[in-house]
Amino acid sequence: MTTGADAVEAQCKRFEVRASEDGRVLFSADEDEITIGAEKLKVTGTEGAVFGHSVETPHIRAEPSQDLRLESPTRSLIMEAPRGVQVRAAAGDFKATCRKELHLQSTEGEIFLNADTIRLGNLPTGSFSSSPSSPNPRQTVYELCACPNGKLYLSPAGVGSTCQFSSSICLWS
Image (cartoon, rainbow, N blue to C red; front, side, top):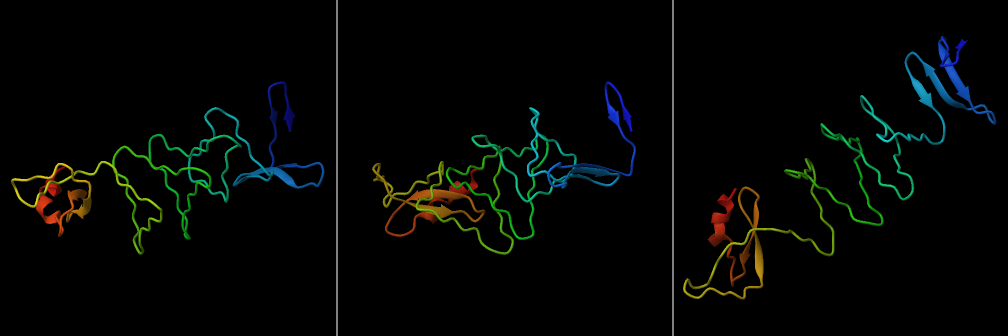
């Protein structure tokens, strides 16, 4: 072990730091693994923690009154678990925002939306009138239509379905 003005260096097979009260290992290092055994690991740098490879942890939590951010500035962020991934906002909103497409996929089950209100904003509206010469400008009831490619649109509600009359919307890009 060498102690100098600028550094403390040690060469050994295993290095440990133990708690003075009960002797439990707070930090240990060997050639294969570094273990931090404290109750809490706090990273205070402005850039947070950067990991070169995968991270496994049973719990990630932000400080009280602080936002928690998991970010991958140049690549994808992937969360995997053999028994599922749960994201919950117990006291606020949950928002998923992306620049291009948002995919919700279930390969063996269903996608279940359970809410008092489900709103779909900015859907295109088709046009339909029961007679070509008398369009109804006060239309307030619409039906939700689905194109063969999965695109959704609104069509003014009629006595029967009006979806088939607005199929040109399915061709919009």
